[in-house]
Image 1 (cartoon, rainbow, N blue to C red):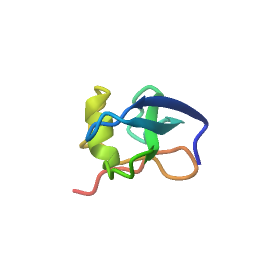
Image 2 (cartoon, rainbow, N blue to C red):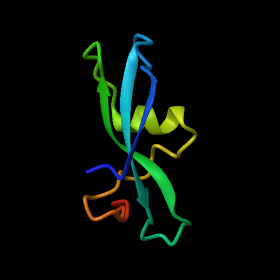
Image 3 (tube, rainbow, N blue to C red):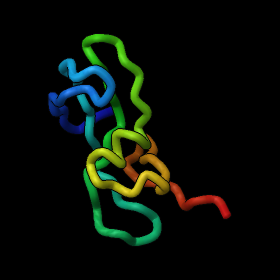
Image 4 (cartoon, rainbow, N blue to C red):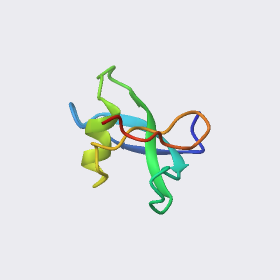
Length: 76
């Protein structure tokens, strides 16, 4: 569940899209960041959260947050 929502242009079609955000603290000890956790384009486009993270300058290789607001350690 999102803590806040922003309205942005969809990465696929440019239509209005809602992006849900959650403040995340990773187990690695990295500082807390706002991370996209939900996406809903009014035109129905499907955009992955990893792609959305990259578009906002976040490292997409890190795992998305869990419902509790904490990321999980990457599997080796």
